[in-house]
Image (cartoon, rainbow, N blue to C red; front, side, top):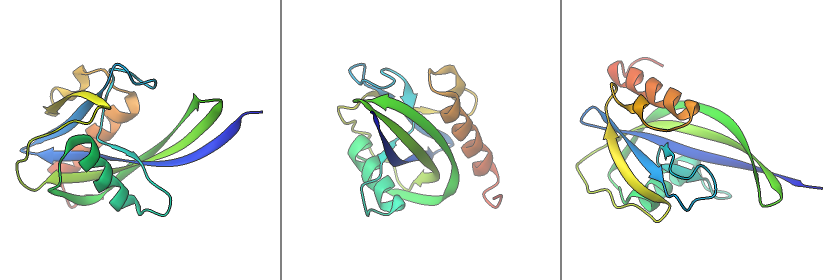
Length: 146
């Protein structure tokens, strides 16, 4: 019988100069190879979601000057992996890059782009990620909206 692994992931819509950072998964990744996504990843046990988010951003992109603005949204997904089912909740945050820094990718990713509201949908990514980016652009226009 297969097991079920419950996970919490966190992701960031990092805005800088009106654009959002997306990263492209390495072609060697087992799950969604070559697909564009938001920087983030799995929260460690007993780690706060915000600390986990900042750690994952740093590990995946090298960025450290990140300000978390607010909780943006969440979505759920399930994946069959290593004889188990991974049941995951992804918590998405609206963030901003406080000052320009170079992006230094981890081996999990092969490319990055800063995309505008008029171009992000052209890239191969899940519909859930596209919806998060769309929401982030809407929130960025009206930060007081909740």
